[in-house]
Length: 271
Image (cartoon, rainbow, N blue to C red):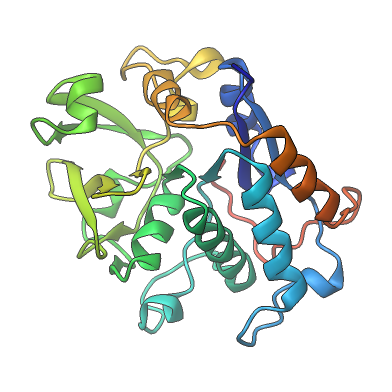
Protein backbone atom coordinates (compact mmCIF):
# COMPACT_ATOMS: atom_id res chain seq x y z
CA UNK A 1 0.00 0.00 0.00
CA UNK A 2 1.55 3.33 -1.02
CA UNK A 3 1.85 6.10 1.55
CA UNK A 4 -1.15 8.44 1.70
CA UNK A 5 -0.52 11.80 0.07
CA UNK A 6 -1.98 14.73 1.99
CA UNK A 7 -2.43 18.33 0.92
CA UNK A 8 -2.32 20.75 3.86
CA UNK A 9 -4.08 23.97 2.87
CA UNK A 10 -1.89 26.34 4.87
CA UNK A 11 1.38 28.14 4.04
CA UNK A 12 4.23 25.67 4.47
CA UNK A 13 6.08 27.79 7.01
CA UNK A 14 3.02 27.92 9.27
CA UNK A 15 2.11 24.24 9.51
CA UNK A 16 5.22 22.42 10.86
CA UNK A 17 3.27 20.52 13.53
CA UNK A 18 0.89 19.09 10.94
CA UNK A 19 3.72 18.12 8.63
CA UNK A 20 5.64 16.46 11.49
CA UNK A 21 2.67 14.52 12.87
CA UNK A 22 1.42 13.12 9.57
CA UNK A 23 4.93 12.38 8.30
CA UNK A 24 5.56 10.42 11.51
CA UNK A 25 2.49 8.35 10.64
CA UNK A 26 3.92 7.55 7.21
CA UNK A 27 2.08 10.08 5.06
CA UNK A 28 3.63 12.16 2.30
CA UNK A 29 2.61 15.78 2.84
CA UNK A 30 2.66 18.99 0.89
CA UNK A 31 1.46 22.41 2.00
CA UNK A 32 0.67 25.63 0.22
CA UNK A 33 3.81 27.40 -0.95
CA UNK A 34 5.03 30.60 0.64
CA UNK A 35 3.55 32.58 -2.23
CA UNK A 36 1.21 32.07 -5.12
CA UNK A 37 1.93 33.70 -8.46
CA UNK A 38 -0.24 36.72 -9.17
CA UNK A 39 -2.53 34.88 -11.57
CA UNK A 40 -3.51 32.39 -8.84
CA UNK A 41 -4.22 34.87 -6.07
CA UNK A 42 -7.75 35.70 -5.03
CA UNK A 43 -8.24 39.36 -5.86
CA UNK A 44 -11.33 40.07 -3.77
CA UNK A 45 -13.91 39.58 -6.49
CA UNK A 46 -16.02 36.59 -7.41
CA UNK A 47 -15.58 34.29 -9.18
CA UNK A 48 -12.08 32.89 -8.70
CA UNK A 49 -9.74 33.13 -11.62
CA UNK A 50 -9.77 30.09 -13.94
CA UNK A 51 -6.09 29.50 -13.09
CA UNK A 52 -6.79 29.29 -9.36
CA UNK A 53 -9.74 26.94 -9.88
CA UNK A 54 -7.56 24.81 -12.16
CA UNK A 55 -4.81 24.68 -9.53
CA UNK A 56 -7.20 23.58 -6.76
CA UNK A 57 -8.83 20.97 -9.01
CA UNK A 58 -5.45 19.56 -10.05
CA UNK A 59 -4.36 19.27 -6.41
CA UNK A 60 -7.58 17.42 -5.60
CA UNK A 61 -6.80 15.02 -8.45
CA UNK A 62 -3.23 14.47 -7.29
CA UNK A 63 -3.59 14.11 -3.49
CA UNK A 64 -5.50 11.52 -1.47
CA UNK A 65 -6.92 13.83 1.22
CA UNK A 66 -7.13 17.42 2.42
CA UNK A 67 -6.14 18.91 5.77
CA UNK A 68 -7.63 22.30 6.68
CA UNK A 69 -5.36 23.59 9.47
CA UNK A 70 -5.88 26.06 12.29
CA UNK A 71 -5.23 29.76 11.88
CA UNK A 72 -6.86 33.14 12.35
CA UNK A 73 -10.57 33.86 12.26
CA UNK A 74 -12.78 33.49 9.20
CA UNK A 75 -13.99 36.55 7.31
CA UNK A 76 -17.49 37.17 8.77
CA UNK A 77 -18.78 38.08 5.32
CA UNK A 78 -18.54 34.39 4.45
CA UNK A 79 -21.25 33.57 6.99
CA UNK A 80 -23.26 36.77 6.40
CA UNK A 81 -22.26 38.69 9.52
CA UNK A 82 -20.46 41.91 10.31
CA UNK A 83 -17.26 41.81 12.33
CA UNK A 84 -18.26 41.24 15.95
CA UNK A 85 -14.98 40.41 17.64
CA UNK A 86 -13.12 38.43 14.98
CA UNK A 87 -9.32 38.60 14.95
CA UNK A 88 -6.48 38.17 12.44
CA UNK A 89 -8.79 37.79 9.47
CA UNK A 90 -7.27 36.84 6.11
CA UNK A 91 -10.08 36.98 3.52
CA UNK A 92 -7.88 35.81 0.65
CA UNK A 93 -6.64 32.71 2.49
CA UNK A 94 -10.17 31.89 3.69
CA UNK A 95 -11.52 31.86 0.14
CA UNK A 96 -8.56 29.90 -1.16
CA UNK A 97 -9.08 27.24 1.51
CA UNK A 98 -12.80 27.06 0.74
CA UNK A 99 -12.00 26.59 -2.94
CA UNK A 100 -9.69 23.69 -2.05
CA UNK A 101 -12.41 22.23 0.14
CA UNK A 102 -14.88 22.32 -2.73
CA UNK A 103 -12.39 20.70 -5.10
CA UNK A 104 -11.57 17.82 -2.74
CA UNK A 105 -15.23 17.23 -1.90
CA UNK A 106 -16.09 17.06 -5.59
CA UNK A 107 -13.51 14.28 -5.92
CA UNK A 108 -14.90 12.45 -2.89
CA UNK A 109 -11.61 12.82 -0.99
CA UNK A 110 -11.47 12.69 2.83
CA UNK A 111 -11.18 16.04 4.61
CA UNK A 112 -10.00 16.75 8.16
CA UNK A 113 -10.54 20.23 9.56
CA UNK A 114 -8.68 21.27 12.70
CA UNK A 115 -9.70 24.32 14.78
CA UNK A 116 -10.29 27.00 12.12
CA UNK A 117 -10.49 24.15 9.62
CA UNK A 118 -13.53 22.72 11.42
CA UNK A 119 -15.17 26.14 11.31
CA UNK A 120 -14.44 26.47 7.58
CA UNK A 121 -16.17 23.14 6.97
CA UNK A 122 -19.21 24.38 8.88
CA UNK A 123 -19.30 27.64 6.91
CA UNK A 124 -18.95 25.77 3.62
CA UNK A 125 -22.06 23.71 4.40
CA UNK A 126 -24.04 26.78 5.46
CA UNK A 127 -23.51 26.66 9.22
CA UNK A 128 -22.92 29.57 11.56
CA UNK A 129 -20.05 30.93 13.66
CA UNK A 130 -20.04 32.58 17.08
CA UNK A 131 -17.38 35.23 16.59
CA UNK A 132 -16.39 35.67 20.24
CA UNK A 133 -17.51 32.99 22.67
CA UNK A 134 -18.89 34.24 26.00
CA UNK A 135 -16.70 31.57 27.62
CA UNK A 136 -13.78 32.24 25.31
CA UNK A 137 -11.25 32.52 28.13
CA UNK A 138 -11.79 28.82 28.81
CA UNK A 139 -10.86 27.95 25.25
CA UNK A 140 -8.43 30.49 23.79
CA UNK A 141 -4.67 30.30 23.52
CA UNK A 142 -3.16 32.31 26.39
CA UNK A 143 0.57 31.69 26.13
CA UNK A 144 -0.20 27.99 25.78
CA UNK A 145 -3.05 25.65 24.92
CA UNK A 146 -5.89 25.39 27.39
CA UNK A 147 -7.07 21.91 28.42
CA UNK A 148 -10.67 21.11 29.30
CA UNK A 149 -12.94 18.07 29.51
CA UNK A 150 -15.31 17.05 26.72
CA UNK A 151 -18.11 14.57 26.16
CA UNK A 152 -18.42 12.56 22.94
CA UNK A 153 -21.78 11.45 21.62
CA UNK A 154 -22.36 7.78 22.34
CA UNK A 155 -21.83 5.63 19.26
CA UNK A 156 -19.95 8.39 17.44
CA UNK A 157 -16.53 8.16 15.83
CA UNK A 158 -14.81 9.90 18.74
CA UNK A 159 -16.63 7.71 21.25
CA UNK A 160 -15.22 4.66 19.49
CA UNK A 161 -11.70 6.13 19.44
CA UNK A 162 -11.46 7.75 22.88
CA UNK A 163 -14.50 6.84 24.97
CA UNK A 164 -17.34 9.02 26.16
CA UNK A 165 -15.37 11.54 28.25
CA UNK A 166 -11.85 12.80 27.60
CA UNK A 167 -9.91 16.09 27.84
CA UNK A 168 -8.60 17.98 24.81
CA UNK A 169 -6.33 20.94 24.22
CA UNK A 170 -7.87 24.21 23.12
CA UNK A 171 -6.69 27.37 21.33
CA UNK A 172 -9.73 29.22 19.98
CA UNK A 173 -12.08 32.03 20.95
CA UNK A 174 -14.70 31.33 18.28
CA UNK A 175 -16.97 28.35 17.81
CA UNK A 176 -19.64 26.99 15.54
CA UNK A 177 -23.29 27.72 16.24
CA UNK A 178 -25.81 25.85 14.10
CA UNK A 179 -24.18 22.98 12.19
CA UNK A 180 -24.22 23.14 8.42
CA UNK A 181 -26.26 20.90 6.13
CA UNK A 182 -25.34 17.24 6.59
CA UNK A 183 -23.14 17.92 9.62
CA UNK A 184 -23.66 16.50 13.11
CA UNK A 185 -22.01 17.73 16.29
CA UNK A 186 -20.51 14.70 18.06
CA UNK A 187 -18.55 16.29 20.90
CA UNK A 188 -19.15 19.16 23.33
CA UNK A 189 -17.22 21.03 26.00
CA UNK A 190 -18.91 21.46 29.41
CA UNK A 191 -20.12 24.95 28.42
CA UNK A 192 -21.85 23.53 25.35
CA UNK A 193 -19.28 24.66 22.78
CA UNK A 194 -19.13 22.12 19.90
CA UNK A 195 -15.79 20.34 19.75
CA UNK A 196 -16.22 18.02 16.75
CA UNK A 197 -18.41 17.47 13.71
CA UNK A 198 -18.83 14.77 11.08
CA UNK A 199 -20.71 14.69 7.80
CA UNK A 200 -23.58 12.26 7.36
CA UNK A 201 -22.38 10.71 4.10
CA UNK A 202 -19.04 12.27 3.19
CA UNK A 203 -15.62 11.39 4.68
CA UNK A 204 -15.44 14.75 6.45
CA UNK A 205 -14.32 15.23 10.06
CA UNK A 206 -13.77 18.45 11.99
CA UNK A 207 -12.33 18.90 15.48
CA UNK A 208 -11.99 22.16 17.37
CA UNK A 209 -8.91 20.86 19.20
CA UNK A 210 -5.39 20.16 17.96
CA UNK A 211 -4.52 16.44 17.72
CA UNK A 212 -1.23 17.33 16.00
CA UNK A 213 -0.19 18.96 19.30
CA UNK A 214 -1.20 15.89 21.30
CA UNK A 215 1.15 13.33 19.75
CA UNK A 216 4.76 12.35 19.10
CA UNK A 217 7.10 15.14 20.28
CA UNK A 218 4.05 17.10 21.48
CA UNK A 219 2.53 14.18 23.42
CA UNK A 220 1.14 15.43 26.70
CA UNK A 221 0.10 13.63 29.88
CA UNK A 222 -3.16 15.54 30.37
CA UNK A 223 -4.84 14.52 27.09
CA UNK A 224 -5.18 11.29 25.12
CA UNK A 225 -2.92 10.60 22.16
CA UNK A 226 -3.86 12.71 19.16
CA UNK A 227 -2.32 10.26 16.72
CA UNK A 228 -5.28 7.88 17.28
CA UNK A 229 -7.53 10.31 15.41
CA UNK A 230 -4.89 11.17 12.80
CA UNK A 231 -4.23 7.48 12.10
CA UNK A 232 -7.96 6.86 11.73
CA UNK A 233 -8.17 9.68 9.21
CA UNK A 234 -5.32 8.20 7.19
CA UNK A 235 -7.21 4.89 7.12
CA UNK A 236 -9.96 6.66 5.15
CA UNK A 237 -7.59 7.57 2.32
CA UNK A 238 -7.80 5.66 -0.94
CA UNK A 239 -4.67 6.22 -3.02
CA UNK A 240 -5.07 8.09 -6.27
CA UNK A 241 -3.92 5.88 -9.16
CA UNK A 242 -0.44 6.56 -10.53
CA UNK A 243 -1.90 7.38 -13.94
CA UNK A 244 -4.36 9.89 -12.50
CA UNK A 245 -1.70 11.46 -10.31
CA UNK A 246 0.76 11.79 -13.18
CA UNK A 247 -1.88 13.40 -15.35
CA UNK A 248 -2.77 15.84 -12.59
CA UNK A 249 0.82 16.68 -11.72
CA UNK A 250 1.65 17.37 -15.34
CA UNK A 251 -1.07 20.00 -15.25
CA UNK A 252 -0.11 21.58 -11.94
CA UNK A 253 1.29 25.08 -11.95
CA UNK A 254 4.85 25.13 -10.70
CA UNK A 255 4.94 27.55 -7.78
CA UNK A 256 8.05 29.15 -6.24
CA UNK A 257 8.61 28.55 -2.52
CA UNK A 258 10.98 31.45 -1.87
CA UNK A 259 8.66 34.47 -1.89
CA UNK A 260 7.05 36.01 1.22
CA UNK A 261 3.89 34.55 2.71
CA UNK A 262 0.71 35.53 0.91
CA UNK A 263 -1.30 35.95 4.09
CA UNK A 264 -2.01 39.54 5.01
CA UNK A 265 -2.36 38.84 8.74
CA UNK A 266 -0.32 36.38 10.80
CA UNK A 267 -1.87 34.89 13.92
CA UNK A 268 0.28 34.58 17.03
CA UNK A 269 -1.34 31.22 17.74
CA UNK A 270 0.84 28.33 16.50
CA UNK A 271 -1.36 26.72 13.87
